[in-house]
Length: 234
Image (cartoon, helix red, strand yellow):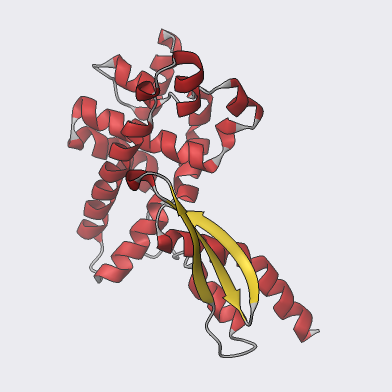
């Protein structure tokens, strides 16, 4: 990364790195590390692993200090703030994708806009700030970039509840969620789940946890379920 690009990214983060190599690693996708550097250890995967934990801790403390709510609501609120969709939107809002180092193949397949890639980038940057400046500095960056728009009265995107409400307008049957696959290393699992109702598969989703995969399956199922419901009312 040239000095101008590095300075631009630091200005976005509002954090100046003492160890510039950490920032370089944070924007290095595994495809680039493999194709150009011939060294997978220089990719941002390890920083992403660390940044994910830092993000969860900072968000947990942030909500704990501001919400007098039971554990279940705190967990659901946190999940909505740190999910793939939320972090990808954060990356898009700050234009972070343009700083990624990608292989030619990833460039051709629009890697700079893929939600999963952007989520990993954001978490890697948080991990890099944590290693370079500690938890307090990482918290400042996370609170400004991810948590600044939070309000306690914000509606939660609980897609499973939304889907159940749509389907149960017709019949009091609860949708069934089935885990159909599990892949990836222990620290970066990918789960795939399906949602089924009355023998029909309505949607399939993936996530880093079983709960997230079920939520994504419900989200994918909602358009068809709503269309079916509207058609039956005609």
